[in-house]
Length: 249
Image (tube, rainbow, N blue to C red; front, top):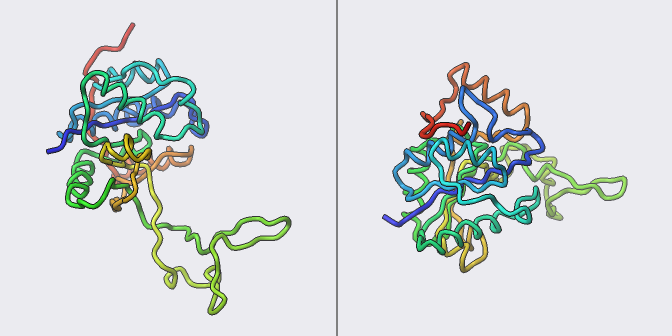
């Protein structure tokens, strides 16, 4: 089996849900569920958290993740592309003589993605020998064929329209081609995508179709409330987690 590492990005400057990475959901910090799922799936030689926050670093280490120093500020802004911190982490591993063949990005905002989900995606990527990576997607509920951009005081369709037939914005959803949107559940890529192609995805990307809660993403305060509702009503479950180290005094 190819050597692999799990990479968990967790900036301290979340704007839409402040402090979400260490905010407690069902008794544990949100980030703990991604660390726990990665540790228990049996695929990774290391589970590494990339963060610019001392507090997040302490929590991540308490739940069993490696935190190899804080992420530099210049690659920790809200607009910093993922490839920057991924290369930063992989470069640090290489300096230590660790060169994984695969890396997986597991974002803390998907707490219902468990070990089985990660294993399923991993197996699907290995079966797709032509793919540089696999990425979690789900069927798009708001179809881009019905989206618009503003042009002065008027609107124009986001997508180019055929000169013949009914425009996409006036067709029934069921009559439009299926479109998928990525979610935050997971990405797994061959390391060559980052080191040789300069991308976290590479040139060829395979789809990983998430099922129900495993693709649920917490991006807004309403998402947090929905996560709590799903747990209370038994519509979702969380990975089993527990601290492996005592908190620092």
